[in-house]
Length: 511
Ligand SMILES: Cc1cc2nc3c(=O)[nH]c(=O)nc-3n(C[C@H](O)[C@H](O)[C@H](O)COP(=O)(O)OP(=O)(O)OC[C@H]3O[C@@H](n4cnc5c(N)ncnc54)[C@H](O)[C@@H]3O)c2cc1C
Figure 1: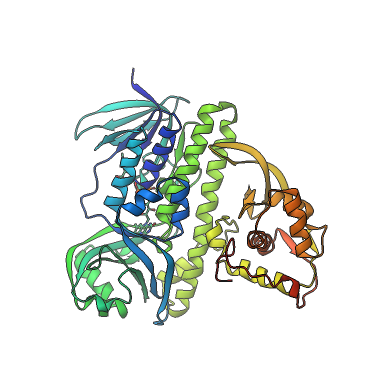
Figure 2: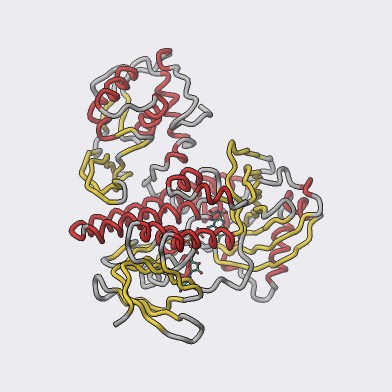
């Protein structure tokens, strides 16, 4: 008899540690198999401040704040043209050396009761018997062992131990990242020591994340098929850094202390993200553009939803299919949404660098109409901001629910479980959405057509539902308009009554 767990998690990166920590906390026997780390040095990665909300929700914010990671204070970007665009964060994010970050999350999983086998590499998974997956692994080099589980979470990142079983799909282009660590002799070369730097050039882009005030990781992203054969990696790295203007200047007084090394940074997704006894979580399911700096956040959010789905399956097997479908649909939507976002940035760069490197990237993902209701992203979404402005100019409203939009019972997250709840479903949002900025969208849709002044609609909503703040309400209404779920057939005009001061809440403090 093989040793049996409720859940076996393959991989102890951010996704694996988070899912295992939650499942162990919720009372399930959970084992993490974690392969020995790669031989090359760990990458420094940037976690923007929008991660803080997720970390707070998951109960790890204090530990991360206490860990002493170098603060991510903003971005300095030379995108397309050589104009400097700097963004300073109100609150810092984290610049993390991934080995330190991963070790901390893994430790927190252990403290919560997850069993961890360090240095154990999963080799194969037999999923043919529902409720009894069998995982073959190497507990040490050359040794063999196996373990059984009701659910297997593939959190093995690009390795994709389960995902590679005919579920993985690649995008049309491939990317190779070549990275090295540099010691800066004069930090005055960098606009702000806490900033992440990005610069585009003719056929690639360069990126830099600080590890400390003196040390920085510098990487170039080049076409994957340009992986060096005749030329050495170092030559390719230096030659590409040489194509930049600002990075070249910054590095003129810096010393390469480690590397360069390369890693595949090509995009992929999955044909489906869950089956009767497995889930593909984080990077095992899909990989988004590193440009976004959202890979870790996406992996951790994916792990939370996976933990909720598995917890539901274990407690209420009768709704297993709905729970797993919910997870799969959400992963699909998240990937499509990030792909569209990065295509917009690549389109902008392609105007300045009309090279196949940029043209291929600019065209990928544009045909996807799905969007992910990520509140932080929606605050900056130009369509949402335009809808907000237009709403402010409307002396009166005449809101109509667009054709094809329905309120349906959909699987949604209710605490630690997936439950069937009312959600707004549209062609661009097949998975449905229930809340935005605490605003109950199905209820808002139900009453939207009945009022011709926003303040009246707001009062009516607050009588019907737990009250929300005006910025959240206007934010949700703007999203519904921007995404074509509602149309406003009211006349445009001055609309002084809507000149509300939106200082905080859903639309943030910039509008
Ligand atoms: C060049 C580059 C730059 C990036 N920059 C950023 C950034 O600035 N910000 C950001 O948020 N994201 C960034 N990302 C993305 C980020 O690294 C990933 O999205 C994130 O690591 C995903 O976490 P994960 O837990 O899903 O997978 P991973 O972090 O890949 O973890 C997978 C784990 O599984 C283990 N494993 C693999 N195979 C097996 C096996 N057979 N058995 C057992 N264990 C196994 C691995 O050792 C590893 O611990 C970048 C990625 C690249 C390539």
